[in-house]
Image (cartoon, rainbow, N blue to C red; front, side, top):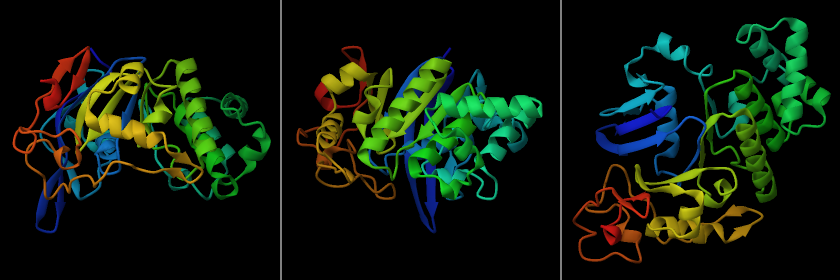
Length: 317
C-alpha cells in the first residue's frame, strides 16, 4: 500500500455566487521512500492539493468527492484534534514563504530547541546539540549565528533552510515542499533543491516536491507528476518525462525551463491556464495545445498507460 494515496479527489472553489473546481478527479500515489515531483504552472492545483493533505484548505475551498489515504487512514474523515496529531508530526510541510511559517518573535535556535524538547522529548542539553547538528547537516556553516538570528535577519535561502530544519526536526514520515525556492535567484534555487534532495535521501523520507519548474526536480526526484487544470496529465520517471515527454503540456514546461535567466523562468506556452469558474469543454489544454485535433475540444481524455507512463491525452489513446 502506498504511504499516501489520493483517490478521485475534487477540491471545490466558491467565490460569491460562483462555483468551480481547482482540482478534479485527482489520483496520485506516493510509495514509502519515494520522492515525487509535482509540477505545473501557477493555478494548476498543486498547492491546494498539498493543503488538502494537511487539512489546511482556505475558507473558499473545500475537499469534495474523494479520499486522501495516509498510512491506511483517510485524512478527510479526521476531525481537527485528530489532524493535529498528524500535521507536523507525521506529515511536515514547507510553504513558499519561510517568513510566514517561522515565528518572528523567537530566534531560530529557540524554535528548533522547542521542537526537540516538546515533540521529541529531549532535555535542554540534547535539544541544543541536536539543533546544531540539524543546521550543520543542511550545509549552514555559520550555525551559531543562525541559531541566534530572528527570521528577518536571514537571507531568503538561509530562512528556507531554517524552515527545512524545523520541519525535519519533527521527524515526519512524509515531507511536502511547496515551491520552496520561490523568490530566490536561479543559482540559489538550484542549490536549495540539491540540498533538499540530499537530505531527503539521506534520511530516507518520503517526499512530495512541488514546483512550477520541471528542471528543478530532475536531479532529486524518482518520478514526476505533471498537473494541469487540477489533474495529473502525465506521470512517469524523471528520466522518461524529462527525456521524452508524452503530453504536449509536459513538452511545453520543458521548453520553458530551457530559457532560464537570472530573474527566473519565463513561460513560453502561449495562452493562460483555464479559469476554474469557466472550464473549457473537452481536454482543458486544447486551447493552448499545438497538437490539438478533432476530439480535443469536445471529449475529455481518459487516463491511459503508455510505455509504462500514465497520460491523459488523445494522442496516446
